[in-house]
Image (tube, rainbow, N blue to C red; front, top):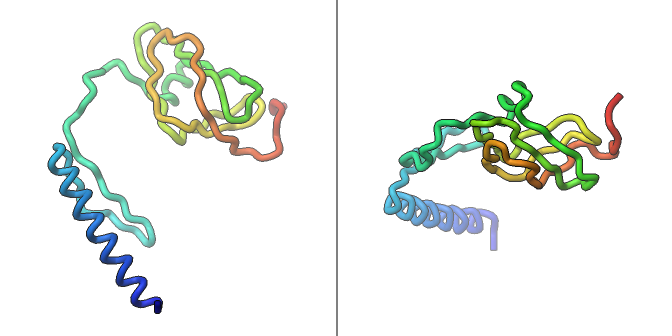
Length: 137
């Protein structure tokens, strides 16, 4: 099969998939906006009603700056323990947040809300510093 034909078939499959996804999203109360494109990156925004009624939320960065959040080593490269020390506010961790320090810097692997006074909670993480496994001096 020649390259032009392959591209044409893939384009048709992508178009059909996009139409099906849009129909599914609209029937469930969500709307997908047209893409915002820059060079080879396209972003589609998903719009819908707010599902969370929580107003006592802060980001991981805010909690760390206020010293209301602790991160503990577990001696496992792909796992950390975290603790929300706040008495009132929950902490939102977004997948991709970076935690620096400890035996190596890590990228957190999941999006999760850690409730106030959580105690220690295990969380998956990815190594971002190949070769280092000791605290920085």
